[in-house]
Image 1: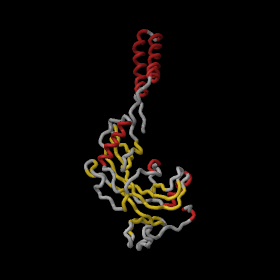
Image 2: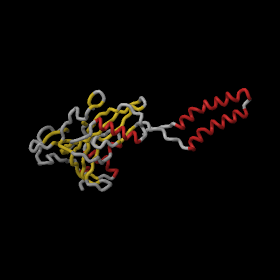
Image 3: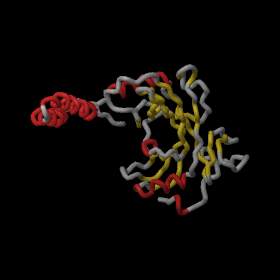
Image 4: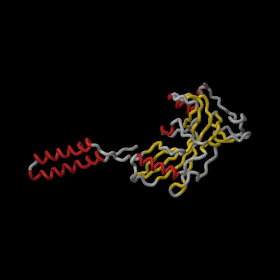
Length: 268
């Protein structure tokens, strides 16, 4: 198996017909003048260029996000809008830690580990065509923006990033643009974000506050014991004119703590 780090010479001919496409040597999309194959040049590689042929519209993805959130007991969300991103992935030939001979690697640095997962849900692919501006359907007062991101790293750089994880890359096969939705959700007056893939609308990540858990008996007992004990001691030992007022003050001071213990929440 060839290690990509051992060579700086890439594929400079069309992988479909073997012709050498004319034109600029710079990075970017192009077509083979001999067979019409859609290609993308990046670094020293000339790769087939593919894009998902069918993906979910924005309103369907938003409805499935609401279903995901309901299963997490998050039912208070307001309007949901979103943008469609076609993220670039390299489909590589080699071996993964699980024994797969082909796998995908994210070709752009987004700083989000969950989007860097090497395996994507199955999708029908076609030769690359720029998606229409209204391809994602309506979102808010207009259509959901559609953005196609160019790769920001070469296949060699992508392979080097996952080499410590046990991935061995022999060669890149193609560049795939895969759809994802970055959703904006109104949650208790805040705008939070969630990522879903555009093929199966699986929830990848969200930052919404989860519903407070139902407190158990021990939590309820602990939350009530300390204010009750302090109030009992105040009523027993404080002078008669001040006992009632002191008991009321103790319960008033302990109310915020009691509320926080019974209604705590956290981000998912």
